[in-house]
Image 1: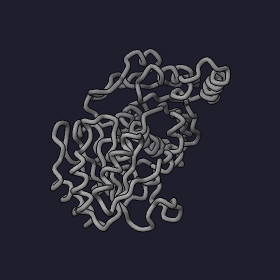
Image 2: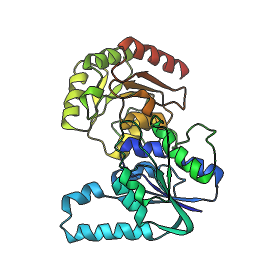
Image 3: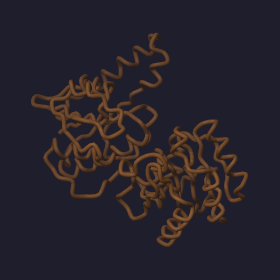
Image 4: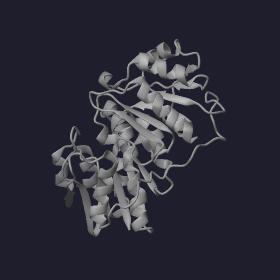
Length: 326
């Protein structure tokens, strides 16, 4: 059986789609699974050795140079790669016009099926027009967890029930290949940055938490100039904290993968640490906890909720609980 997964972005969404791979292979161990993903997230999917072939999608880059013949040639090459293999199942678990077009371009075997979402979840960017590319549309509860949605769609199409916790297929910590900026011993990482200000936790809360962790090193990651400035402001009040250099996607994943403790707001890197089964405290301030909370390991503690950020005392109690497990 040949299966194509279409989940191109964003970082957290790609991550939350990974357990589909283990589910399918648990019930169909001889299946070959390919994946179309935005080129920036190829390295994340590649960490799962059960994915046979990854087809990079570069719409974010192509949009900037659609007039160039090199870009048009690259787009033609992408669709050629999508059509190279004939598939028994094509799954679009993103539900957007762009992912529907990719699904529409894929070739299926005689009797093959193109399966997608019949509806979106609350607050999602689901585009109903994507259903025109489906041969089957699977409905899900609008409040279905982000990890469960893709798993349920595949289970309904392939006729199996979900009886196990999500398996992201990711490796354990890599102690042998740490970059120079990463401490040799245990460290905590704060994923304090996110695009939407309302999702952020107050700076004084991060400072109080960081001081309580001393002398444990605290690494501060950032992804934009504004986040770097925020990190520098936090580090100025934390003698045990350091601001990291600009990280590539591979380096950011390694940061999450090797952390002895990760504390972060509702953002992709926090969820990556949870998928690696690291000790994680997920902080929810202005997004619904039900949607993305790490609920597959007792090493993950979810605090706060939409409109109800947690207090520092709650986070420190969670730290004590997780450190007691170490």
